[in-house]
Image (cartoon, rainbow over all chains, first blue to last red; front, side, top):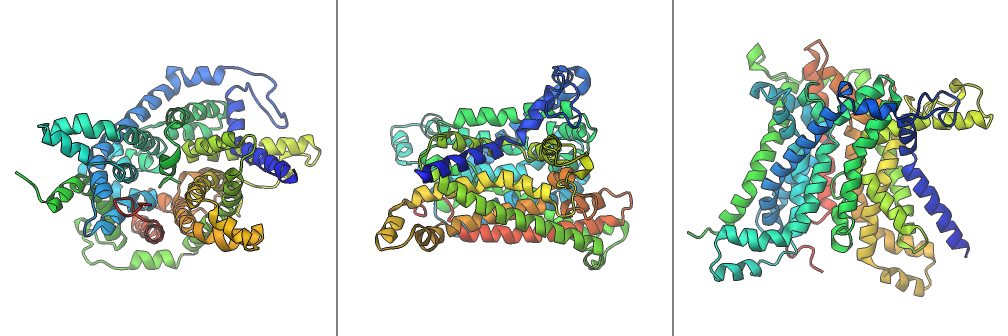
Length: 268
Length: 291
């Protein structure tokens, strides 16, 4: 009985600690002035939310741009990550360990180590300060993630269905669309959603390559946080965590059993 | 036309390797050349180690390196300990277990920058905890509250990493525990081991590869992240990534090779963590993870 009580207390403490940093952000977004030492704001208002959604704040444009960059990065990463994942998941070959290492390293080596050199490279190519440059930069942490998830998906993929379709006269693109794609789609969706989130949370690569001209949501969030507009910061933070929540609700059904280990693979 | 298996594999891998390798290695390569002060376009055609010598003999750099190692080491160690406890807890059945598992997953999706601002609003001297301390009569004014953010020991930064990484490591451990099962521990218990002995001598060694791999990821991230120390760190010494980026964007262009040298040093540590991670995880694929 005592062990049960201990577990419950430990569980409640853990749950509280996990949501705690979000609480002041949520309160601030509805606060109309919240001075020390008030535990709660004296007045509540929707001013911060109204301002965040007004054209002057630039938050809506920033939100659209961030969505576009994350979506484009995800599509490009899927185009190269699905074939590479197939090679890694289905085949054993000489040099596989090296290839895996090369595909893994960009996700683990800190962004700052790459961002400065990449800025130099992109400067020559005229890609600094452009949305395309930022998308290419985001591919560095996103492709490894996509490829490794797809490798895991393909490692439990049965190629005999493809052989059967082919022996029945299906052409390669028909085999892919009618046999391969339906089989890998659940895994591909999870890979895509988490690839989206990896791009969605990039800060330094956007700052260094975008040079302040590509103003994604985390950069806007930082601007308001450092100018002391805590209420608007709270509202933007709430908007910013929304896609993650949606992704979680969409994938929760799939994140059981075998796929559960996929979730946090390489994105601490 | 039929392709040999080897050609097929190369064609499947080529787009990812060319695109990713092109971006990643050209960036590291250019960074390396610049750090060696090799810039033929402005007449520097003799690579030298001056930038590295300048950086490694600068007290400011050494203080930043020490701070970043402290942040990464402390964050990883504390996160691992709490994550072990949390995973052991979540392995049991108790009311609310599903809910905590959901919060773990949710936490993984929250960008670090949001956590950093949340920690700032919680632990700053006019933050939520300072207000509670005032209400409880523990402090008389904001300045009486201990400096937990922008502080020399980087407590706020470490708190943020612990908040983010406990669920990350915890979920990896939980997945490993489910794969291992409880049979080994039961056997040890039936042979007279205490719960603690069964944990230390049976379960922990089996969890070790996953734990080391996860720790390598967390260490590399906490060592090299930029926006978290930017928001929660003190102005001096700065965390190494903050110092490196500030040197790079310095109006004095002479500081750039030194910034690149710092980036290379961070890359070196990151590379070491890649090797640790790869050493302790088995790659996905046929015949490797078959049970």
